[in-house]
Length: 130
Image (cartoon, rainbow, N blue to C red; front, side):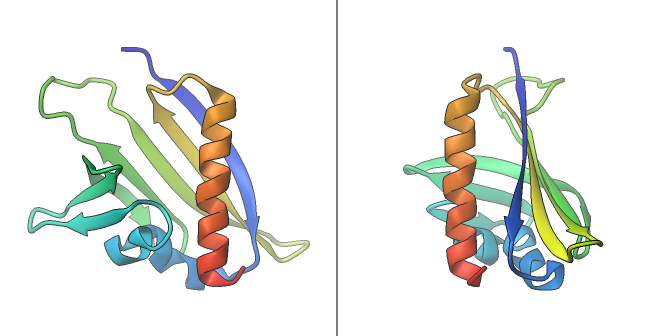
């Protein structure tokens, strides 16, 4: 199945240190990204959207900087897995914080993806007051 890459930057009026728990922890992610997010004893995150489970592993992270989740497909050997990465960047000149979203998935409608992520980021901004 073909995968498509979507990237976008969103300015958020909050510090990287304040935002990081919202992109790294299951409880933080559950507040803005999904209907619910849980984590099991094997450190597998379960993102629940519309009563459907989407299991993912946190494959990379740096404190107060970025996280990368790779989705797990039990039904097939995946040599090109779907993933998303959330990266916190600061513009040193303006002191603005940006959340860079990288989404590598089956969705091929870039406009729909942009609307989806814009809505999610609006949820995050509302949650953190930024």
